[in-house]
Image (tube, rainbow, N blue to C red; front, top):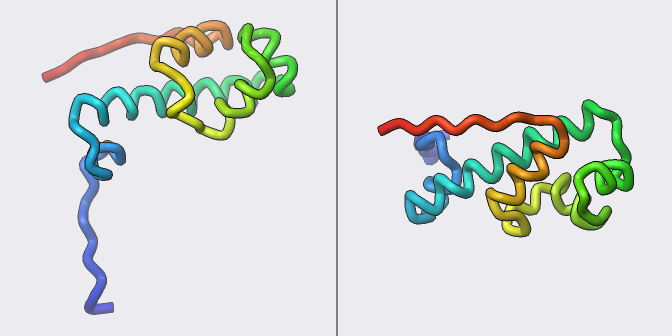
Length: 95
């Protein structure tokens, strides 16, 4: 147990993984929107095929969304899909 080192995270796993700060922030936002959208689809009880119809994308694309393939979706597309799923996004910025 003496060899264990615990390092507190920054609150952004992508920053902790070494991504440049601006890129890490966008990746964090994409992940958050993706998670919330996937939760919304689950709450609605939609199958992947039903979700595809409502979201206007293919079923394989829904599958990638639900699997958390962040790299496959831009923030713009994720916000569009979230809106189509019935979510309303707000952007707050701080220093």
